[in-house]
Length: 379
Ligand SMILES: Nc1ncnc2c1ncn2[C@@H]1O[C@H](COP(=O)(O)OP(=O)(O)OP(=O)(O)O)[C@@H](O)[C@H]1O
Ligand SMILES: [Mg+2]
Image (cartoon, rainbow, N blue to C red; front, top):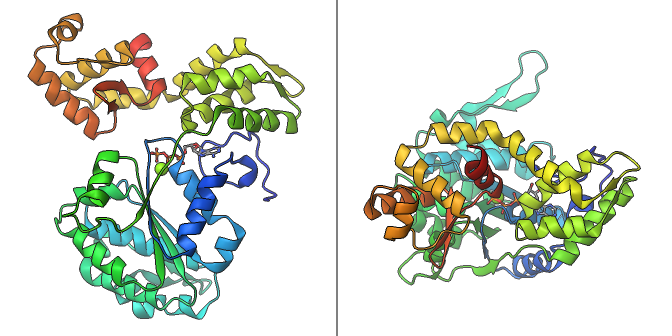
């Protein structure tokens, strides 16, 4: 357990320690079992449920930290193999830089394309690594070097690639096949491929003609059960000299179907609204929600100002509907003054692609609950 102390125990950003992390015992065990038995895992679940948090939590387990080098690469914002290689190499360096091992010393000897980023501070003589994306001139060569380097590791490695489906969007078309080959040949590393776009992920791992077909054990992630989360939240209040009615937590959990990020955001605000020695009650939920929405308003406005008008109208219609069915029907089009079924369809395609809405069994909703509320009531 960590000694880090924080002002608000409902963490909404980086993983801190198991003290602030709820449950995921079985899921952590599942990862441990497959990783230690040499099987790669594809972790697929909707956004904001807690995939990245689970991976971080798993990486913080003491047996895992001792036995493996662990690397976590988020490739959500990458669009080419060069960016992938850049993110991959930087993460390895960042993890290893404070360690004193022979393997670390070989970093620039093996990954020669990164040498350009190695500098010695003129004043202190301390080594630093400052690489620009433009320095990746031959991504294929650098990728080869990175995998060669990993195979020389003095301990096994676990490499988690988050938002893995992104490689399907790269400018180069052969990245899937290329990576699959590299990973298959790699002796020293196990992989966790995490992703939130179910369709793309499952296409990658479950289509016989695709390079990653059946190469990993599939794992889903459901919301943390309501009772488990309620216990966790009540304890965090009590441990910090505050009190909360169980029904507040249950109400918040139900409001967001247990989706971790939204629930944590609300609990973080409710905690902030409750004075030390105070008592958090159901009557505070509305204010907390408004505060959260207002705190995000700047980014919602930015988002809307960058969205083409046709998508804006459809997005707001879906938000007002909450759960929108038959969105290309004459009734829906008339109700929200949309132009035509085909224009709704093309807007939907882009809204889905950009993660603004989600679709299950023909039902659409704005994926961010707070944004949905802002769109339907304030905007
Ligand atoms: N088990 C947990 N206990 C407490 N907080 C958690 C837990 N899992 C995740 N969180 C918190 O919830 C938020 C969302 O989790 P996380 O970023 O892991 O989700 P994700 O599925 O990776 O989302 P995205 O699809 O946006 O990448 C984070 O702020 C994280 O701190
Ligand atoms: Mg994530």
